[in-house]
Image (cartoon, rainbow, N blue to C red; front, side, top):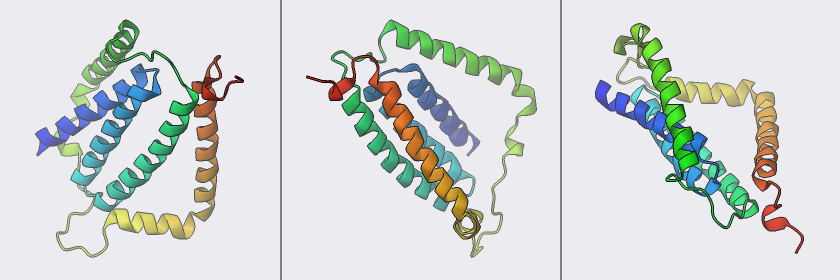
Length: 172
């Protein structure tokens, strides 16, 4: 079981490196989908099945909207792919940083430090469902603030991907 979760964690790092090293939204969206799927797999393995399902559906729905807007506004005729030198250089640099950090902190990490949230087999209320209910009951203001932050993030992403050429909304 530890090998599966180690594979999930490596997949998560590879997906995040694919997102961080690629400037084109066309190719970075696949890295985001991989990172979201593998991250939800890690959550499922440690007792958060409901939370991972909700996170996966909401995150991929929001990611689809952001990808559609950014792909429409960043209309590049020749986007950089994963095989270009600059993208490979950034990816190798990120993998090197993650490898050095993993080697530095390797002595304090072991499989025994990862525990499952719910230890009872037939427990009626799981920890992740209780957390979601608590968030909706007492965290209404935080949900409103989070919605505004996500809207602001959408506008920031659209402004950053627009660049100098003004994308698809430039004056003809």
